[in-house]
Image 1 (spheres, rainbow, N blue to C red):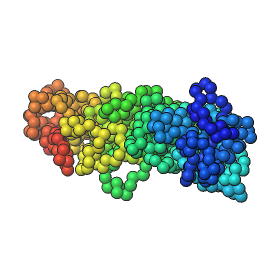
Image 2: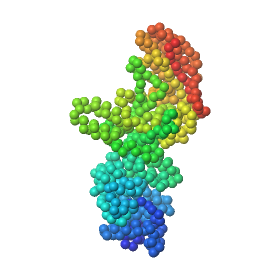
Image 3: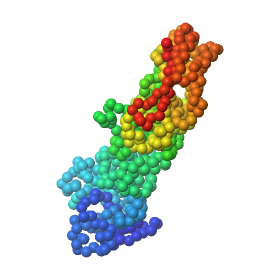
Image 4: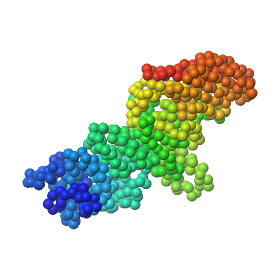
Length: 549
């Protein structure tokens, strides 16, 4: 670490364990800042006349008066011509601010006659990305205006600072640990802040999430994706997926899909009051080449029911991914009511599912999903969900990006979806006419290819599928069972319909057969060729239709 001597303006490097007490400056950059190269060459009169030098001079003067022989100022204590040193400095900066003896916040645009409380939120310092960690990390902060007049400390203004910046007051007073604040809520603190370089929006948040990253200037928004990936490697906090953005006017007429990750901190603006629910997620999250890996137990499709209370099918349904977080106002209400409730478990279930945050997913391949909407849902009715019976885990495309009508409409193929998967992927649809009633949910294999929200198999390469249905055709009919087996390798389909103890084979592919129902009805079972319309890259699919003649 390189420090500036507050008496001589000389720079000196110190190894870990030998760093003396030092003051540190938090400020916003302006024109003609004094650099490392300027200080290294000495402090001639020309440098002293430079506009920004007075800021360094006044910092050192104040630090020396308080008994500190050294100070750290980012403009001149980092050799930015060295990429290695710049990377080390940015990855260490949160700790450097945290380990300082005192931090001076210099508000260049706060005049001596202006009220600190009224002007704070309008100061440029309150809107810059880098100054967020400079507010949170130091245990002791003193605020000064443009004339270096003392205004107060972070401890004195903790409530005001919390209201102006969104940062938890407990974080500012040191009574709450950063790790106890949901990831989405921490992201919201930066949602209204800006940086000159796009990449710095991510790099300025490294210390707040306790991660380290290589700096790659030129990667632009990709830097924020990398930040989220590094956070996921260290925590299973699902609030990192709680970001939300309104649907744009141009997207109103299409189904908008996105990646699972956000494109910038601004999309976390609705997460300011997030708290963890009493039902905490303890599973494992992973980053793979197919996307973000999640345990299947998290996935619950929105279930529709038919007239008899059994499972039904609609033209489009989606899955819900509960994030185990809710907004603080609902949590506070529940906490107040809890001692007065006779049946706490039942009432909390209602509160949780009616207020907990969840996101929509759409299945696009075997065990592969995409986020079905850029908006997070705040209402998840408990009675509309059931556990998806499938493989132990699934993957969600990382993103970021917006993909209109994917995979069923026209448009560019998302770059994060492997091209070999797209070229080999096709779908087997299962559709029922209104007079067919299911008694139970289908039993399908392979599980990871079965989309129980939309009743279709998402398949690729060689496969063999089995779908078993229990159904009847009317109020007086007996229960019927059908098992469908399709072996793509042998290019044949075997159908069987079981009514009571009798078994009747159906005709093969592209044929329709009439089979008497148990109560005299007649059903038709057929498989027809299908294509996804409007996509020249789409391979064929097949559709199973069950209807009454």
